[in-house]
Image 1 (cartoon, one colour):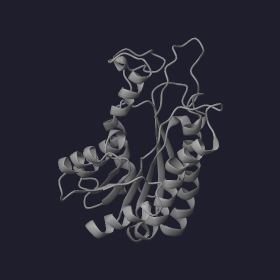
Image 2 (cartoon, rainbow, N blue to C red; image 1 turned 180 degrees about the vertical axis):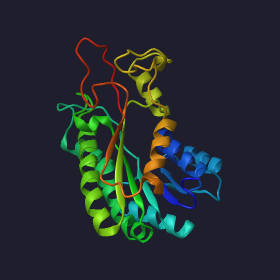
Image 3 (tube, rainbow, N blue to C red; image 1 turned 90 degrees about the horizontal axis):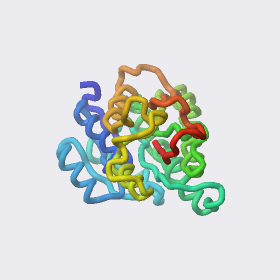
Length: 266
């Protein structure tokens, strides 16, 4: 098992990509702290993984002291901390006209500032274990779509943080920091989000080739499979790297004007 005896915090893991990562981590031998806002879903995930493998924490990461409480739960439950996965994020549509100061601050607090504060709270314990950080970003970090302005800005900030801390923390603390930028992923929330935008119940079954050359978009378990490499010791000394996981050619950019427009996300 590639993550045998490792203790890993996975934020935003009550559903979607985070749930897939937490599930795969346990399958690879790890103990995990499941985190999110949806208590019912979180209890279901923790139960599926087993009380010997998972503990649940429900709290908004932007709340004062939340990162410290999350880290302390890991230490109190499992005795150490080997890695954190910063996956929790707000995905909300906005453009320059609809984005005001309060909205932008809210998105940045959850998507960029909270991950930084969790890394900072976890650093003493990650230093002890020569652990790692994996940030889950988005291909929108490179420029993003017109109606994902604030979200794209926050993911750009996260990517710069990964590059910066991937160098400094590796040199000074022996802690690796890397990032995965998923493209369009078929999560539970994404299915509902697109239906709210007026698409059909089975919208994901017939997508323009410009978005899905393979005939489908990514699955959460495929992101989880990639995450294992960065959390495992087999990735060696590699740090400060950002890997894009997407299939279409205009990564992080707007689609050509002659293609069918569909609002995508990570």
